[in-house]
Length: 196
Image (cartoon, rainbow, N blue to C red; front, side):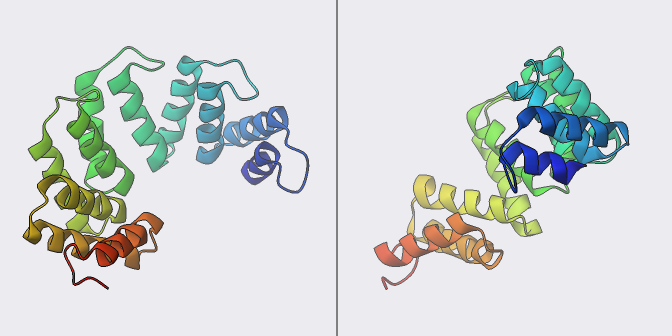
């Protein structure tokens, strides 16, 4: 059902039909499929094929999270922090996001991003860098690229740029396209590595 909804939503194999996609997602959700709930939530969040309803989106994310869907858990944390579809709960959202960040690349990245920019959490760059380092050492490719970019563009010392290249290289092994692009740029400009 979820793949049928996905095909209908994006127009794979047939003409794009967002309302049909919603029907497929809803049927999958009613059968207990977490991806059905998550995709239905995204439709409510954006108003695709259904009336826009952040509240309904949040409810669907919660159901998917209860079924163990990691991305839905992250969405629940973000909704709590932002007050989207639910009363803002900084403490609950922060606790959930920190819990998720210990084992999820996207959550670790989200936590660092929110700490850098002060979105729903207190702005605190050293804390954000600490989470990026944790994520990078854990092998989270997106955290490796973000840490590398921070070292390259903000710290800007020769030592920091050499470390940035190491993180870009590690993330590039995971196949992350922007890691490859950053690594290419470092070689092209001779920053952190000999120019080549």
